[in-house]
Length: 187
Image: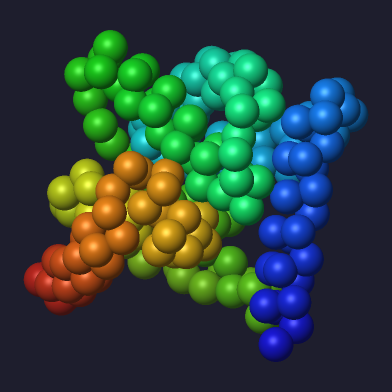
């Protein structure tokens, strides 16, 4: 139950940051960047498949956020709004490159939070990355946002511009497809 309380506290903190930013508090914007930069960088790097390009895209993301936050109507949707901007900027970058992929899962991303130890061996992580790569991009994106970025269905719908039912469907079929791919890839 402590985890839910921490999540709620973080969400309230994010909403307060958004309100402070809307009031023109530059320090709050710096805090917002500090709170989300690495998470957005990880997401953008996965979408682009190039960690190096993520920093360039993030510059545009943060500029869009700075310009747009005064017009953000619902501060409760801050997280989804940030990911939607990041997704849009990454998609623009990819259209210029004509590609759509995700950066592989790194060993440090697969940590068992309860024990602080790797949840998977390097071989298992490599196998999981191969299986994720075999998924259709919309299914892969839904899994990344849900399980790696810990977003709710509603946040994913907002971030991707999809209906809630589409998100549910994508996650359902993505989990099923991933399970089948994993079973087929077992030695």
